[in-house]
Length: 104
Image 1 (cartoon, rainbow, N blue to C red):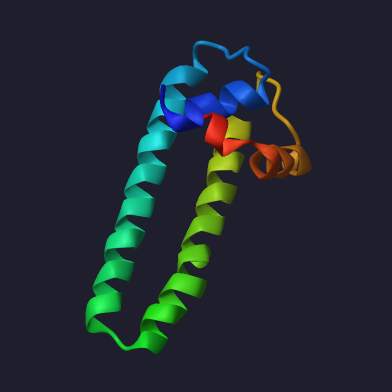
Image 2 (cartoon, one colour):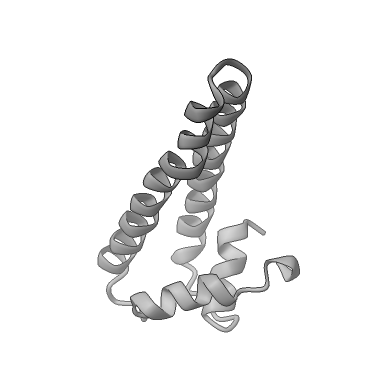
């Protein structure tokens, strides 16, 4: 089961509309590519760049990439699947923060 699908199942207390399954699979792939790309860039910077450049990218720029992706995905989901119930922004953040990822 794709990771985002498992997280969505936890967030929705085990009940997920069938139309969200392909969407959560695509979002899992999106995050896989984004995080793998950032890891490759960070590894390359660790080898070839100065420690200051590597640190700046790892500790700042990666978050500059991740926060808009989270926000845009959330907004897209709210608009595209507006007919389905969704947690509010605080509920969404709370579910991300309180999920026991070791159980996934």
